[in-house]
Structure formats: structure tokens, C-alpha cells
Length: 243
Image (cartoon, rainbow, N blue to C red):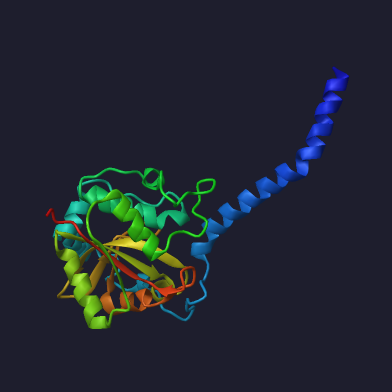
């Protein structure tokens, strides 16, 4: 009995560095994924006055109007789903998009069988705009366009098209130009209020939740560089009409 305990003790000492190193690595990755989006990114501006201070940011009357828009109403038919961890803004956006079309996928199920596999539940580098387009194409047999480098008038026109029930938009933006802190993020576009030039962003981060923002301010957040891909951010336009 004593000999067996001694052998077990020696075995633990022999493998302890590997075990502890693995635990430390996992904790570090999870911590980075949790903290990264909350830290000021390289192209964030700490002098920015957050849009959260604006009266129209989550004004109840304006939000009620926005939720009544045709595409927003389609999203609202089912409970809106928030990202399960900070690296899952892309999968959460796609899950909500599919749910608005009557197709149910959990965030985790969306990734099964794809090249985008979490490590211990975390997408270490998140997803790029092109990768998110590929994920939508994998789960939905509809055309998906990747759109970058739009002028402000063309971007505003794209936001207005977000009221078309036969389209779904997902925007990739940096939180810095909007909130003065944060990092890259995905969320669906739920609609557009043309008389106020306000875009209804279905933020999948449960700390922010859906909000309204002027089209020019959002455009500035979208025309930033994604340092992971080396490309400009942008948006995805999904044509959902049946042929």
C-alpha cells in the first residue's frame, strides 16, 4: 500500500509540470478572450465620447419604433441570443440571423464540422469577416456578399437595405470609434430609421444589448483595419429570398 502511494507520488511529480503548464495555458487563453474585447484596441481612441451618453442610444420610444421594423420584428419572433463568451460574437450573430429565418442552430452547433473549432470553448482569434461569410454559406444556401470600403453614402444605402425582409446584414466594427474602448466585434443589423439616420444594431454582447447609432458614426467604426486578416472591416449582405 505504501509502495503504491510512493509510486503515485512519483508519477504526479513527474507529470506535474506538464499538467500545471497546460492549466496555466488554458487559463491564460480564456482570460485573454474574456479581457481582450474589454481593453482598448490598437485603433481605439480613448478621447472618443461614447455613444452610450447620447439620448438616442437606447431611447425606449425609438427602440420601440426600431423593433417594429420588418427585419427587426423577424428577429424578435424568437428570444434574442447573446454570445456565450467574448470570442463568440460571430457565431452568435449567425445564430440570430438563422433564427430570424426559422432555422435553429446553437452557437456551438454552428461550428461543428467546420474549420472553425474552439479550443476549450474559445475561438482564440475569433473569426474574420471572410470566415464568418464562409460559416453562413455552410449553414444557409443563400448568396452572401462580403462588402468593404464603402463610401458613407453607399454605406448609408446599405443600412437602409437592412429594412428589406429579403435581406440580412451582419456588420463587423471596432468598438473604439463608438465607445472609446473595446475591440473588433460582429452584430446583425436589425433595421434603419431613415428620418433620424439611425442604424439599429443588434449587439450580441449582453452587456451592451441592441442600440441605435448614427450611420456616419457606425461607418467610421466599420472602416477600420482588422489586424488579424490585414483587411478592412465591413459587412455581410445575405440575400434570403427563395429563388
